[in-house]
Image (cartoon, rainbow, N blue to C red; front, side, top):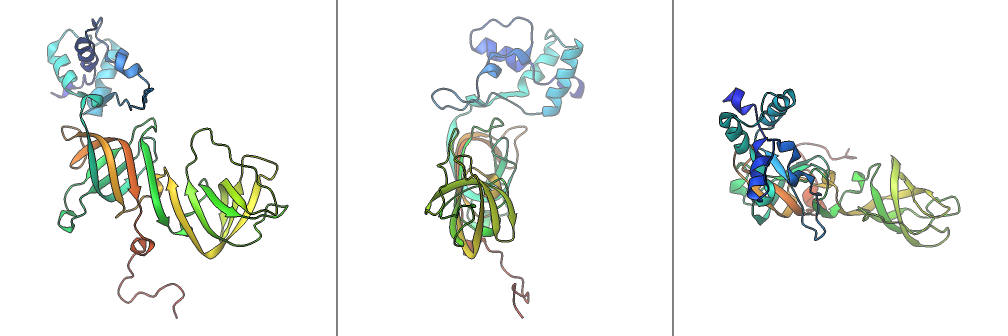
Amino acid sequence: MSRLCSCAAVLGAALFAAGSGVEASPFNPYAADEEALPPIAADGTIHWGTFYKSPELQQAYQRLWNLGACRGSNKAITVPVAENKLVIDRLPEADFKGVVRAASGHLAGGMLAFGEADAAAVNAEPLVAQFHPAGVTRFTVSGPVPASMLASGMVIRLRAEVDARGRSTAAIKAFEIVTPPPGFTPDEVRPERVETIVGTVTAIRKNVASVRVDAGKLRRLTLTMAEDAVATVDAARLDLVGPGDAIEAKGRLWTGEGSMGAGTVFVSDVLVTKRSLDEQRPAAAPGARTVGAR
């Protein structure tokens, strides 16, 4: 069915039109009404649109459509094309819980594999949480992380005092890695006062962080971190998710053709809770020396 099914992903638009009572004129899946909907509705509902079980099939059909070779008159072509298209929003939403196996990517289009916490299920295929490509999946990871995870581009929040040149007057012992809401404007930083500072890390050199604050006159800070600094995270960053973290999610499960692992969950809401710092530390190999040991 390679040649016929290479006409992939098009009739779904016609089926959508038929299902909604709209008369479909020339067969063109790329003009489907559902594709024009915004990724998130006014009531907060996330709109997923279309998933192609075989992306290769869809791409091949698109090439044929653009060449004028497929115009919807041959059912031997349009039927497999229709069956290749899945309208995600028609899948029921369900709740999921488990333990993270792996994570990759970013909020827009990233993925997170997770399975059951039971040790007996470790080797079982995981579910794969697929984040919305428009970055509208509501996602938070919270809990303790090693202070060494601080990196350029992260936004931090802390209580500290800086001098007139923007240098911390004492080593920073605690800070949070956060994701500010859209439109957030931080308070200006005033010298010689202990205040809440929210800024973006622009560079890290050993234990010294350069931080940019987008408000006020004092916008470039130099913060020295204590060796035993404690970090916590309350952010939408997949790069801070690790194996063993707990996950709670809400999404639409697809286990048919084109799904990944035990099934793809198109997630609208994801909450990841970090393990304790002791649990996050990798176990030392037998006979291995710890850092600083003699």
